[in-house]
Length: 252
Image: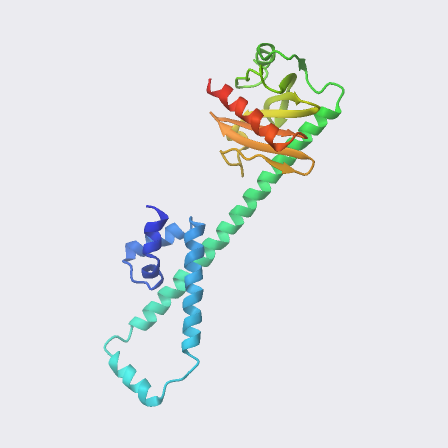
C-alpha cells in the first residue's frame, strides 16, 4: 500500500475512527515510515493547538448544562477518543524518534566506511609500491586477483579515454578482502575498491553518489552483489566518467 493511501486515512487514524484492525495496521506503518509519522505528528500538534485556542474562553454555566444534556447518552465517547488520541501521539513520537536515530546511525556508519576507504587510498599512495601487480593491461591485472579474493570482476577497455590503468593490489575493509585498482587521469590518481556488498553495505545506498569530501572526490555504488568505491584527488566529473566505464564493463 502506497503512502498516499495511508495519508488519506491519517485523520481517521488520529481521531480513532478506524476499526481495531485498521488502527493496528496504521500503528505498524507509522513505526516504519518516517514521512507518515512526521505528518501525523504535525497534525497531532495542530489539533492540540486548536484545542488550546478553543479553551481560551470558558462557556457559561447554562451553555455547559445544555451541552452536557445533549451528550448524556454518550458519556464514554469523549474519554475513548482522548485515550486513543494520546495513544496515537505516543506511537507517532516513538516512530519519529526511531526514524531519526536510524538515519543518524546510517550516516555515522557511512562516514566511517568512507573514512576507512580514504585511509586505504592515502596509505597506498604514500607507499613506495602503491600496487602489487604493475600493468596497464587489464588482461594481466584481472587474472592476478584470481585465488587472492573470493570473487571476480570485469575491467573496462580504456582505449579512447583519458584514463590509464597503473595496476592493483589486495585491500581489506571490515576484514573483508577486496581489490584495489589504481587509475591515472592527467596527474591525478584514482583508487577503485571492489568488495562483496553484503559484508560492508551498512549505511550505503545502491545508487551512484559521487561528491567532494575534503581533499578527495569519492563515490560508491552496488552492482551485481559487489560494492564499488571511487576515491581520488581528481575532479568529481572524472570519477563519474570512470564510474560509467566500470559499470559498462560489469554488464558484460
